[in-house]
Image (tube, rainbow, N blue to C red; front, side, top):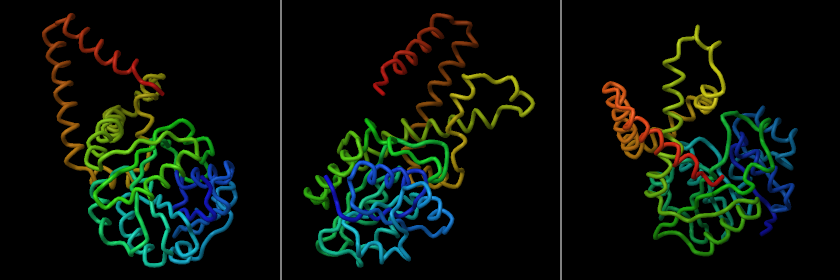
Length: 280
């Protein structure tokens, strides 16, 4: 799939990587960036993620075939609703946010005729921030989750899938509530766990850490404000995931307190089997 003009709103790590990938793979003839931070636009232009910077959101939306919103999650719905009236009929609006249900409730049924929105979430990224860390290969072989609701236009969904596939991604379509329940465990809970582990570690012991601590806490280096917004946008599912983790930790605690080697080994084996089953 190739489009004439892609507008990327929010040119940080993900937005910059989308722009880089679209330009290098020929998925877009022109990539236009929008960001309220002039320095972010300058860096995205310098690293080759953009062809040009637009003066404002509506100007970019009016020229675009696809508008990709890569802002923090709590800004996505307002951005979509602001951009939509400026879009030409046939424009596809989509996003790269980590939660979907609340976003779809805010956007569905509120767009002009001929302008469609498809919620998207690439399962890719890094704890790093900014387009300086962007990569044209970030989405190669990675899953991208697209959402379907009663308002979803099938042609728009197909176009969104084709765009991500052009960047090298593997696309899966999900219900937005199912999406949020899944990523609460596979993405949001790991971040909370990493942050909790880092937070209880005394600074004077940091010199005693090795690869295990660094691997387990890597994502805790992500932006706190960004992650607070993500967690608050998926509160119910994250609380349920935390409840399941609490139950597993309780099982470990009981096995240790009882000196039950068999139970402890079984719990560790279950974790190993799940980790070994990862396909990427």
